[in-house]
Amino acid sequence: MAILLSLGRFTLGRAVGVGFAKINGISLIRRTMHLQQNQAFVNGKWVGARSGETFEITNPANEQVIGTVPDMDVDDVNEAIGSAYDAFYDKGWHNSTAKERAALLKKWFHLLEINRQEIARIMTAESGKPIAESLGEISYGNSFVEWFAEEARRIYGEIVPTPQANRQMMLVKQPVGVAGLITPWNFPHAMITRKASAAIAAGCTVVIKPAEDTPLTALALTKLAEEAGFPKGVFNVITSSRKNAASIGELLCKSEKVAAISFTGSTEVGRLLYKQCSDGIKRIGLELGGNAPFIVFSSADLDKAVTGAMNSKFRNCGQTCISANRFLIQDEIHDEFIARLTEKIKALKIGDGSHDGVQIGPLINHSQVNKVTEFVEDAKQKGAHVVYGGHQLSQHGALFFEPTIITHLRDDMRLYKEEIFGPVVSVIRFKTEEEALQIANASQRGLAGYFYSNDLNQVFRVSKLLETGMIGINEGLISSAEAAFGGIKESGIGREGSKYGIDEYVYIKYLCYGSLE
Image 1 (cartoon, one colour):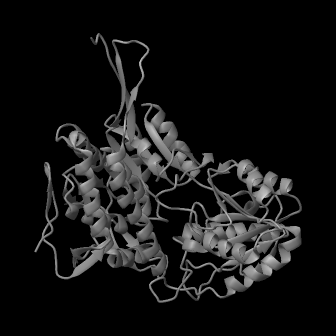
Image 2 (tube, one colour):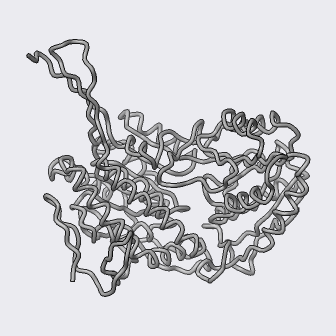
Image 3 (cartoon, one colour):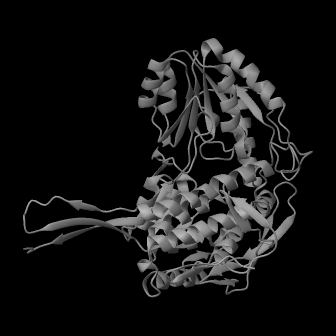
């Protein structure tokens, strides 16, 4: 049996397996397929590196090898860029209709939904995050595909009133061309779907470079994109180890065939890519590191604040760019907040994310474990007080670190100033609203911020004065497909998700029709 839908020049769907699933009230045939791939995807074909080189992917929970993928270099990536370029210009993707692109994205969305359990299994195995979180990320990531499938048909232009009677002025939006997408390991599904679905909805073709720690999830998504029927060259995924990552990033930024770059990752790497894109004055979107303040004022509902702290801090073991990083707690409620939070943290179940009920998995790699350990030791040596935790958990595995609460922080400690990307709650006591804002804004990172208050006047004041691109007000989970995701200062430029996510992949063309009668 098969699901087939023909729209214009593109036929969607292929033969599928046995069983049924229902999504949004629509019965679909359930597919039974193995999604773990060991090759990259270029011009509609599964390929290895020209050199024949591969690299291993390991499970952070036990450091066992779970697969190998091609270790591609710039020659391989040049081929992928060429296929994306040809698909856009020579094979007509730039002339595809919004309806056709929307239909392809909807088909991809349905396949992603049907295969969510298999994708989650792969994601947990290579990233270490608990299976419940992997499933949550899949729901989140899939929502972008659904959202941009709908937004594809709402890329509107304008007719502008003209100052001359014999002229007509129009503004139209057109796709920029090939988009290079460089994605991180902490959200290996959602960061690809958030970028790729927006680019494809706009009419671009894509070359995706997933993080070297988590390429298997990317390739699983690619297998389903292939099944959805994307034309050859529209959707390309290349894999590489760390040794080739820098040269590939530079090629994507400097290639004249690549019109736009979207990168999610560290500010340091983002700064380098920004410089490399400057040679060609290339379109670039950057979602970079954060240093999110989490402020709890004395008027706050402490139960809600503690729940928000747990949600914001410990998702993916603290390895998210919008994790609460600096906990600013007002004097009057400081001790009670710490006591309540400690009890919650003590109850967390730690272990292999594939096991039922696990809430905290391992950190992604040894580099990250070393960083978290160094930050904690630096604070301890300079007089900070460890309320709970503070150690590696070797009984679970080499990459596990205990959920930790540290108080009595000072501004000469790394925990005070830098993003830790780990399960450490760094607490700073403050007296006044002005002091809290001064501390919160004394950072060049401005991605997300959170605060808890039941004082309406304070809510409006702090919302206006807190220097971040996104704010959770009495809320610790702020991401959704409908929201404009992005930061200010050194946390990036551009926005992802929402209706503004399309803007990263289109340009406005002004048309002036003259000599009209």
